[in-house]
Image 1 (cartoon, one colour):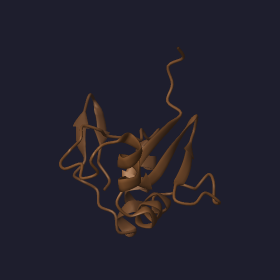
Image 2: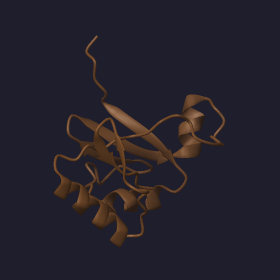
Image 3: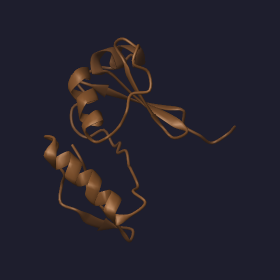
Image 4: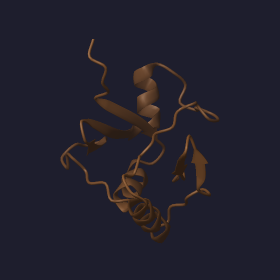
Length: 112
């Protein structure tokens, strides 16, 4: 079996608001015509946004998903200037970044 990921689907409470968040940090939709789901091409894979309740129904689980479910997605910038550009873009557009920290010798911050 080839080790790869094709699509990561995120169940979201508000599809339009979530789409706007990713577009504010510079992501571009890969399929404008899809209805009820949003795709962003990210190199060799895609990230999809899908209504949380519908995704839970597809997975046959309860949609409440209370608390942290043990998943984090990472974007590894290539340079410090790219980190500054991304975090600056998010601050200007109603997203928040946690305090930057070091982990495994790398500097990181979380956007939400």
